[in-house]
Image (tube, rainbow, N blue to C red):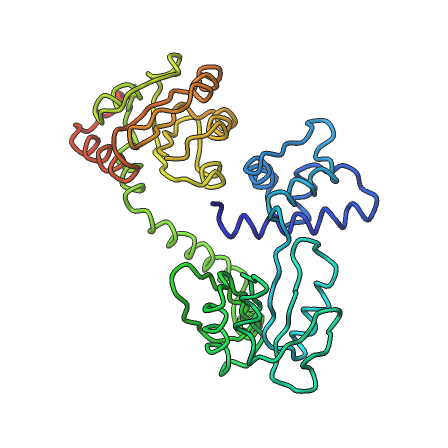
Length: 359
């Protein structure tokens, strides 16, 4: 499963590409799309690689096919209906905005407690009484909801939506919502966003804002302390893949061309988009994501080796692809976390490298 940030970028790309198509553009390069999106060209290329779409080096991305490819990633095979709770000014504006825009994602039912709105249609969407929210949502098989109620009514509406089978909620209610495990809430707190913008405009110079963003990004790295310790132990060392495999009990099953290559970094994960961000020509990828796409990632980023886990060997097709790209495949008999822990123990026990001779 890809990250929310990747999904949000894909949605942005599609909106930008649709605008380009409507303006008569047939092809676009990654650096052009990146400029429109406020991103880097490398990020755009990694995102499209993650969904299996590639453009032409001479003509760039074909806009129509790119939109179709993103649609195949973002949209499900069948139409997904959405319930909207709270048909006030904001709720009606959201219904009007989405009316007819996404054939596979549509607001199918609205709910309100205002008698003047009940049993009417708002831009083609029928409005029901909030008292029958739970059975109606359940009968319609709706799993997505938009919440635009006042804060005081938000939790009660959320509880009813969850009981009816809703799994994802976009909340404009500006209040924390309590949901069980397995239910996702995406908060759209306009008040907090506006107050933050006002404070920055009034008090915070641009340099301070940039420093805060960098500090938050640095804090996020603390979520993987084991990876950071592994990278620290690897810094300045010359760790060969074959020696590392022997120490952790992993079996090398392909890629005879480079088992003696040096590793300077280890990254563990199961999201292709994250692996694309972290991979390099001296990175060992540790993952349970066993697919041809992983070999393509390794080829794209010149990754020397991939270590699969849990003692499961890849299919012959994957091994053949790895042999063709010169990628070493290893299989660890234990899980991702345990494999990283064993690598850490191995590196921590190794003697420190001798200082380099100086002229």
